[in-house]
Amino acid sequence: MTKAASKSDKLKEASQNAPFRAIADYTYDWETWVGPDTDVRWVNPAVERITGYSVAECLAMPDYPLSIIHEEDRPTMARNLASAAQGGSGNHEEFRIRRKDGKLRWGAVSWQPIEDENGAAAGYRTSVRDITDTKHIENELRNAYSEAEKADRAKTRFLAAASHDLRQPLQAISMFAGALKASLGDGNSRDLVTRIQECIGGANELLEALLDVSRLDAGVLVPRPRDFIACDLMERIELEFAAQARNKRLAMRSVPSTVIVHTDQALLHRIVGNLVANAIRYTDRGRILLGCRLQGRILCFEVWDTGQGIAPDLRDRVFEEFFQIGNPERDRQRGLGLGLAIVRRLAALLRLTVSLDSRPGKGSVFRVEVPLAKSQDYLAQPDSAGTVDKSAVAGRTIMVIDDDPVQVDALSSLLAGWGCNV
Image (cartoon, rainbow, N blue to C red; front, top):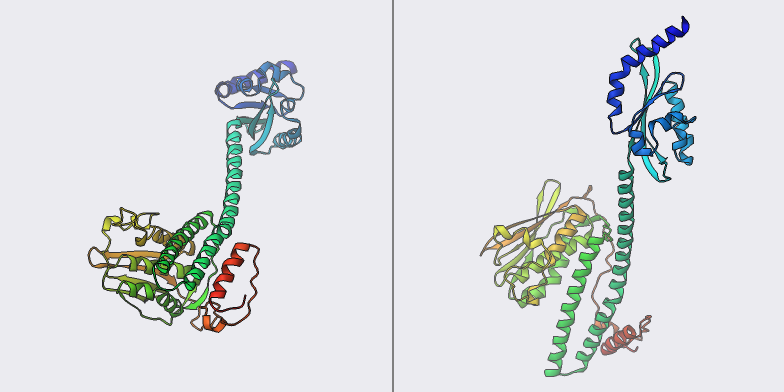
């Protein structure tokens, strides 16, 4: 009677689970049902596609499924299955599968308890998804990321070397040219040296601009924000560009502001300086105005010009590398087409907003929005910048030390031309 009842119960169970088993047999994932007595009730056919073992072979294994799992992953899987047998559940635990042909594949297993129609424990179900392709993609991404990091480090090393090794010859040539010019009287020879100096200046300007763009792309520029008075920066820029404006017969003035702002002063100087240089370059007559406008907790630095203006459809393009308006012959006196590209990148680095308004034929205004300092009480910072007074060093004895003999010769020649004993 007991055997008959047991057989009847199993037949009833099989009949009740037949629809679910039929569904599981056709799923893409590897499915297993383990009964409450830890015996394997069934395995779906997907197991053969993933592991290479047939359903019959799996059911005949005494330690299924541990014998199919990579040796290093078996202890973890054994703990997961023990948890499942106690009514626990889990999701997407990754492990390695050792196929019948010896090859390895990756799987992700999920498990949950099963109850019969009366709510009694009926064992647990495991579902394994083949994630081998996903793991391969992850490995490829990791390798690509590693290669990108190597390339980035190489680029940083190149920039450091370029900043030193490319600048030094230009600096030496510039100093030799300065010393040669000082030794010549008026005439054609002196004019030729002046032209040489102009060419050196253009090459140095191009090098500095390209290095700036490369440093910004490489992310090696680190902002050092601090509090400073706006008029300090404006006065320096006006002094720096006054001669260029006079040479073009342009009136240039600044409207100072005593407001204290907070950002990297050197990088903001480069931004506003590039805007002023651009204004002078594209203005043939009229004036350049450098001013500030307070807007809440923002100080807006503004550079106005009476130049040719910029058409609405070109206002975004002027911030692109090497894009210039009205310079198809690439006249270097009209710039390199990198100034505004550097402005936009520096502004992004400092999280500042740059905007442009313009009327073709009337002029343009560029604006840079800079946050105010938390406090408007300012403690002046020592200024290390300055110009050399040649008369102050004339007659002095100066020792020149450098690991580059060319630099030593160039600087020695320049100092000797200033009347120093080198």
